[in-house]
Image (cartoon, rainbow, N blue to C red):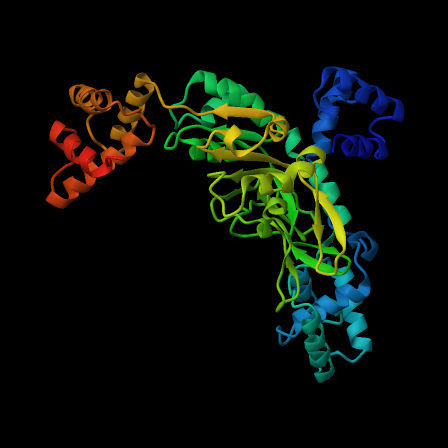
Length: 466
């Protein structure tokens, strides 16, 4: 990925060949990112580098700029207009998300082949024409839908997708100390943990978050996702060897209004994606999903997570062996590219550009071998809270539920239960115990209150002898 970025800067005339060589040499000695090394050597200004990473896909001005053939666009238009009744060129343009001048060429093709007819117009300009389809067009549409049922925005090419993923790389994100503290302000975590999390997030490299259950590992991973800066563009779909692969997923991708007016509408402006999977993960979810009825593909999870965050929660609890999952990702983690296979047998590469977090309550060495752990740059343990941290969590939970905190009752909880029974403190306990107290208060139709009797009842309902 670093070499690709350097080559892109080179091809666009922002640096020269000797600049790239010296920056790569400096990177081998001092580390860091290629862009930062170029800035440090004075070969490019920081503002120019920032602008390079903030670019967007511009609207194609010609058929050639789309990377698609006129016949492909015409076939896609046919599938759209089958369901439209009367239509104008503008309405078709809005459906396929291509400029009118490109759609116009497809419309003229259809008129010549007697697939559509003009029904009326408000003016002499073609953009005002109202069209209807013919029986011949219906037959052709049925044939096309049998070949591929995709009826959506025009796809982008795999090369355009690779280039945009490279520009929007997660390795370019910078997380400063102030934004880190602000993002984690809703959690009670130690300063030492924040110090370790900051560099790990900024590195863009995979990390293990591990430790005993019930201590906010998942909450920390989700907060990292909210902390990722900037927005990115992803395509609705891509095309590889005439096969359509849908990428945009409204369930996992959060759209935001575009900041520019002339961006290519085949791309969706979203927040950096945060994809989370848990015990339901199987290896097939990391491969292309081919729908044999609609006859097009759905992108795998790691592709939907590109330029963002991929959280593997409860790692080790999946329906597959941990080693099988990690073996699947050994090459992608090292080379930052993955390989997918079409049902035709053709393989192709895609970017593997995401911050991966493995979250587990199992000791990492019990899950994977030393060789793989070396590939995970950061291993961060989330341990039981201290008494002071536990008290802060308890106070915050009481406050958020409108319950007055009572220090005597809290000390009673610590001494009579945790210390007496030798039970470790967990960050989730205050929330769960207070929930029991609230449930009891609602049952008796009384205001919830922190009392010793309430703690006794909550403890008996919450904990079991193991």
